[in-house]
Amino acid sequence: MGQDKDRKKQHIANQVLKYLDGCLSGIDVTSEEEIAAFVKHMNEIRGVLGEPLNYVGFQQQLRFCLNIAQSTPSIMSVLQDVAQKTRAHLHKNLASHWEKRSLVYKLNLAKKNPRTLAEFVAGYPIDPSAPVGTLFNPRIVWRSRDLSFGPAAARNVVLADTDSRPNSDDYVCSKANGFYRVPVTESVIFVDKNDGEAGKIWAELIVLRDVFGDEESDDKAQILEWFQRTIDDAVNERRNVRPNHPGSMVQIGWNAGPFHARVFGLAKSYTKNLNEETRTAHDLDAIAAINVAWALTKAVTPTDVTHIIEEALAASGMPRIATRDVPEGTGFRIILGDKTYSFPLYDRAPPEGYLTRDYSASLHTDPSYIPGACAISLNVGRRVDTERPPPTFSGAVSSRYTTRSHSKHGQASAAADPLADDTAKWPVEGGGNFVDMSLRVVVVQATGTLFVFDPSQRHGTTRLCGAHNYIAAFTFSSRIKEAFEKAKKGQQIEAEKGAGDGNFDFE
Image (cartoon, rainbow, N blue to C red; front, top):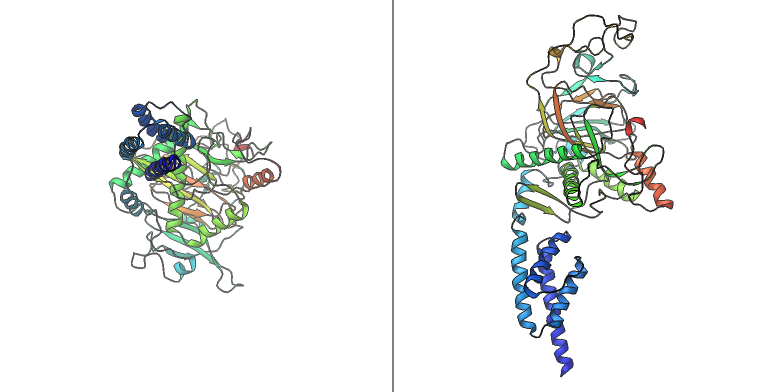
């Protein structure tokens, strides 16, 4: 008789745990804070002594509450009431399933009609009814690389849209100099083929406009504002990994450490003394920003692009993006206004992310462990100053400079001030535009522009000339893959001392 009573009590206890577990699953519990909120309610009602605030400790408290109680049904009633109240409390600011689906649809975060590159080229884009040159029906341009075109990827080759600094060695990337300038209204895929292999085609550069939609909406305005705030927080609080370049660039995720001591680990990026709660919140924002860029890439680019990336990551065993305060796993969340959109099961983005503000890079290459077009850049905010500073160009020769101009005339010129700038010649649409040198293409930047390029080819950014860009990007650096391989052979993969302390300008 006593055994039957014990079994019944245990059965009821198990049912309570199962019920509460279902409640927790329903509220997407992803942090100790949410569990703590639930436990706090229990403690207030039942006076249960505190336990470690983790899932095991939480269940132990429930069992303790059941075991010491004399009337199990009443306890079950109390716990049910607490569960319902806590669930309602935690759901108050959580987006519903319908709200999340609506956001994903409005912002093009889900695949609508995935297509391969061959299908795009054959005239079967995501939406054949869309005007040619738009997001879902990009223009196809056949264009081969000329590896002899332009300067070598030497340091300090500054790129420019116009000849506003006539005494400098700026390399002007204009139509007159043979460049295809992609206007802000045009989506285009530059493709090439190998005549020796029937049907072998590939994308050299993919440029897609209005990826958040071509119409203004509250959702679009909110996510762009969230993106820009996330990047502002990142560049104001973290180490600038390109301190010798205009603007700021910070790294999120895995890092190979300083050049002299390669150590694979999570980037040590914060320069401000922030508490753990703030660091974690800002890390979650940064991870989400990179994840949205990844989700958009998978949704709107030819499937070949992301398949190659996924296959390379799977083959190498490289981890997905994480930080020292946000461990590896799945999922991300976006906070828009007072609403939290949680996607707990979504696969994380690749391991190496970057957030930049007002950044410009001279001509360079980035060796990558994934061949071809794989690096991704998403512009989430751009403005161009309406007022230009007064010209500094006077035509006078400055005694401070004794340089020789070789890129324009091939012979010595007067030692004029190379920084003298005729701002009246700045590009109307602003600078800070992406340049693929051997492809001879300039991508004029605009909010909502996503492009995929080959980082191993010479590329850079034109002088800003009054432009301000907010960009989320990721690439696949060979040096990080090499550090990871070494770590797999003899070291643990963790946030080792020295990881994230590198200054890329001296590598």
